[in-house]
Amino acid sequence: TFNTVIHAWAKSGGKESATKAQQLLNNMHVMYQQGNTFAKPDTITYNVVINAWAKSGGKGAAKETEKLLAKMHALHQGGDPDVKPNVVTYGAVIDSYAKSGEQGAAARADQLLADMIQMHQIDP
Image 1 (cartoon, one colour):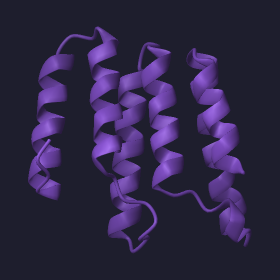
Image 2 (image 1 turned 90 degrees about the vertical axis):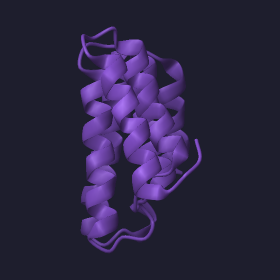
Image 3 (image 1 turned 45 degrees about the vertical axis):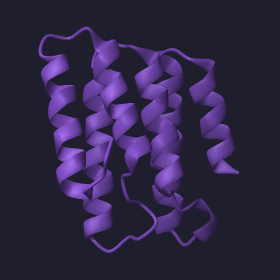
């Protein structure tokens, strides 16, 4: 399945792997819009791609994870019940900031945790 291939890319590590996983996710959206219901991305798909970016540690990886988180929220709020950010999603985005070494990363990770708690009423 698509998720298995994305997972394989994610496990291989490095920025190129994250880029490949992202490309496959993008292709899945195109195929789904063309009528291939087997290509529909879900929360697991997004979580694996986000995790690939987090593991890559590449410059800008944290921003990429946050873009995917925002897209998940938009899809879910737009009526897609299969794409809903969860604790795993937020954990991977927070991890990407922790690994980024970017200025302000700790504060952003803290804000994401607060957002998760507020939006989902989840006990971390």
